[in-house]
Length: 516
Image (cartoon, rainbow, N blue to C red; front, top):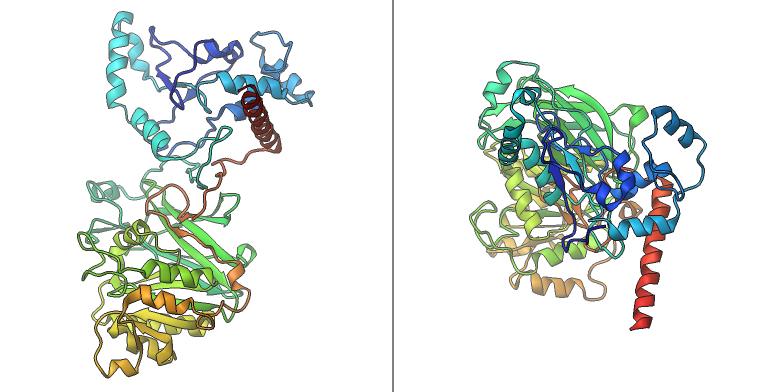
């Protein structure tokens, strides 16, 4: 076979009717001549991809009859394939899989066929190569495919690779037509600005998902009377999304859905993804089901985390030690809650700021629209959590303006921590962190100052950081490196193949080291 390139993966994109195009896979293994190239999905129908597997090991496991030793290389009929597959119980030998992966040009398939309009068949044959070559640079299908390979870590790691755990979401249905004809005109040249507050609910109470779908930086257009798919990830370790229902937004772009009792979730933090059927724009947030008496630590974003005036400023700086203080309480097992009086239209920018500075994962609450009394909104939200979710607030952080908010929910002065300027009267109502978060963290780590959270809630809470909004993967970024799960479920046979390849690679490295 041809020598292996020095790059990680090679992609051979071509039009099937191009007379100058050729396949690469049969040159590496003649048995791949019996497999068709992978069809690149149309961007108009599948802007995020159609979810078909691209990995070499998956195809070896799907078509084992093509890779068994001493099998003649011929193109079988569909009937012969069915009969062969039905009577086959032996898996492909590990030596065959290892030799295939060693000479292959990356962990994925190599040949990919592009969509070709039927009208091109009327063009002269000698003109087709020039037309096809020029079309690569203006094809949305090609651009979307390249971006998916660059931005999405959906490769099946080869032996020795260490990757981050990412749960990739790929819509299973193409984009649908808008229910209202005027929607496409209203949404032209405006970007999505969907948002929803994270949901905290006590086990046994109705679990309600609510969100708002808007377009434009200042809520210029509301998504009125259009369908939205609701997905939820019930098991973060497996990384599989479960479809719940499809709902239609109201005249204000709002959506509300009550999870039926038979589908109600147990204890845990569950990522929720709402996908607009018309353009596949999406919204991510958390639904957290907690037991009674769950202990929480509240942080007010306004004026307590940043050294500048606004979180959404040009280059807001983080107060020294702020991230470490939040992580300290997270490591002790407390549920972290971030509150702000800012309108929810700023949610994406604020969440991006929290992610860029590696703030620990927590549940975030924004005011519903522009409010003339943001402190009242904060107090009402926290009291609602006390009464309905039966949470227990261990302590609260914020600016001097937040003292009245925390006092209204029953926190004592020694449980309220204030950063920044404060009057002499306020020194009696709260603890003023005049030396900053760094000195405060040293005090918290002293013996007997801060205790671990009580109860079983700490067993269901995640320890991680925020993910950037708009990522196709999970909204959680783990602080430790781990091999990620693939975007599609692997069967047990694929897992055995992968583990066997890992062992074979270790044996090869050991033998090479002994020879040296």
